[in-house]
Amino acid sequence: MTAPRVPLQLIAPSRRLEAALRLAAGPSAGSVSATLSYLCQQLSALCASPVASVYVLEDRDDLVLRGNHGFPEAVLGEVRLKVGQGITGTALETMRPMTVDDAGVVEQFEYFPQLAEERYPAFLALPLLAGPRPRGVLVLQREKGPFSEADVLLATAASRAITAVLEAQHPQGANLLLHGAGNGRGRVLGAARVLSRALPRRQRTGDLSSEDPHSDLMNAFTAEREEIRALAERARSVLHDRVRELEEAATVAEDRRLQERAVEHLSAGLPPSLALERIAAEFARTLASHGPAARRAVDVEAFLGGVAHRHAGLEPVRVRRGELIVAVHVSGLSALRAWASGAVGALCAGVAEDATGAPVLTALGVPSAFGVRQLFDSVGNGTRLALDSDSGEIYVNPTAAQAASWRR
Image (cartoon, one colour):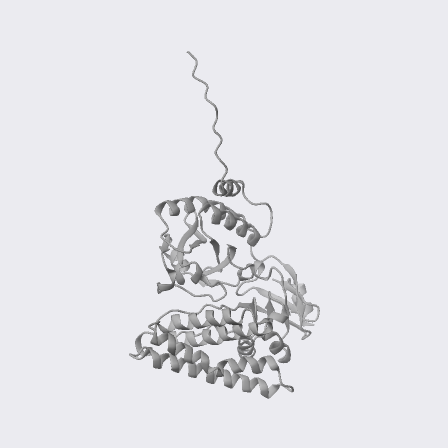
């Protein structure tokens, strides 16, 4: 007796099914960031998460945002964490999935103003493993949690496509030539120092803590303000002409509204670190629609970042003499600090018109290039760089011959 014949059933198409099929097929050829961002787009649809991000482990303990769906493309390569830092870094450190319904109230959370992550507070962070070796972290975010066990299992299974890309990526150390708009301040050789915009949330401990958080925060404001005054005065002493952007950046430290707003948030019960995050976000939203004035938000963010580091008792990342700073947008305050610390150059992914630090660097004679495409695809902390700010050419990991020609 023959078996009965039954019609085949086609699975009805859906957004999640199509994403799963594209994920299984894999991406087409492209840069590592483009490939990872494509996979993030499919994971976002598959896992019903508006935001999907891939942080890649580099230089042993740096987690660098290399792929994303849901945030602006400009943040790729700029957002960086250390292993053990934040929810993402903790997931890699423990090599276990981490999930929270509201990341904003978790002590480990690291706030990056350029991401505005408060819109998607529900977090799922999955370590990306190649055998026993950690390669990075996959982060999914939603407007609200929780992430279920089924969500975790699905994301874990799908993450293998990302790990495969990381295993096959091109080796570091390749010699590359990038192009940007130079500021005509000559040639320079040095190592890269990527500027982080994270506002620390670590609480004061030990001898640094007191029973008066209001006083602690006001002291941090005062100390940061006095340092900026000293740096600005030092810069003025070597400049022949007044630089408007330098003066505008310096006035940010004198803006008492920032301190007054911090007091209001403290009175409302917010801890100091959250108060500073809230102020940075408020100013960014307020100034976003004001054209050129919107650039001031980057200086506000830089000032509040310095206050946050002082309040937490943490030493901010200092640029060392002989390094080139690397960023998406260089604020006037960051440019001032870098120059004072002995930075020999600067590279920006954003155009000069969007960086308040561009005129400051140029006036102070620091070779710089702006609008450098794919900057963060190939440059990380310690990467060797040769910059010609007259032509706008940047050699990444220059050969001995190229380095010698730069020294002539």
